[in-house]
View (cartoon, rainbow, N blue to C red):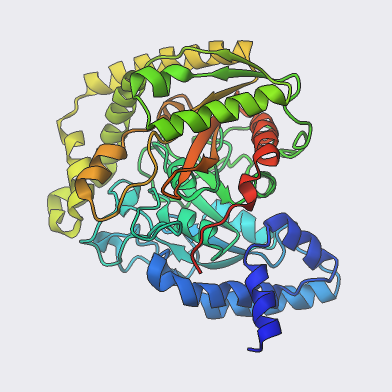
Length: 472
């Protein structure tokens, strides 16, 4: 490759989904050139990041050639035509293994696409491969599994968050411009927070979970992960929609999530949930300062910010824990009884407590859950959106197991799995150590457009979408 070509390739990996979509439609960008740029970057950086469990590069490049021919003939499949996407490896992709990053499913070959993958393909996206996760989306960064854990592109000695760890790492590093993740207790928003990208947990039921290995039937969500707010809205437009074969799917109108994207923050009522990071779980001072900066920026842009009180993080965590462990045990009990040694230590330790929970515990947790839903709904009746912490700390070193165990639960994402409200995490700044800090926005049911509006207002004012890891 000559120097000019190398320079072109170097620029392409930071091209946004929206920019690439417009350029391909106009005939100014070749899907093959775009794919090759990402494959070259994967080859160079993934040995350090471990974002992939299985790269499907040859098939992706072949699909890009087909997409290029279609684009040349004026036949665009949809708004994601020719754009690479990475898929978390608990989500089925036809012909590829769905391992859940576990020895238990090491040879499990998917026969068909998950609904969310099928919708991405219908919109023209090209699957580039399957991505690292925590084992069964619960284990944590583990070194006793068949594949190594993903690492943070801002500093590969640090973890990238999880459980959608490869998705967050790969998007942030420019290995692909978008990815699918799943979120049961914060697993889209944690890597988004740690890796400085945009991660959305949509309203419960907005995106079909059919073809996705479950962790907790009533807490699981599928969400888009991108580098910009606009790209996140575009991706959600493509994957949202009712699925009558998913019992948790919601029959509501979808689409137009970017309709208010550039209306700004003027006139918005923002509820600041300070007690999450000031009282319930005191945050790192740099996290607190960054949240205050987000709040002041929105005020200067014309938002009316007021303090809001919700149940404590401890209460939310207790309810989430009982529901998640009860439902996860119902899924994993046969394997844990028959082949416990095939699980990694972390996943086994986190799944086993479900065996000791009773029906009464589950019923009481769901009773309290209903009260919490009512409380969040009441708060959102008075404001348009909530602002709160996501992670209470920057990502710690991946090889410091005690720090990983200490910091992983220090977060404010779990409440909105319990209630099912849409929640978006994104960068709020950088720590003194050069690691992303984060903020979370929460909205009313099925009002993702409002989340994108306020997130875009912050993004435009701060320029966080133009900050990239120094890797590569």
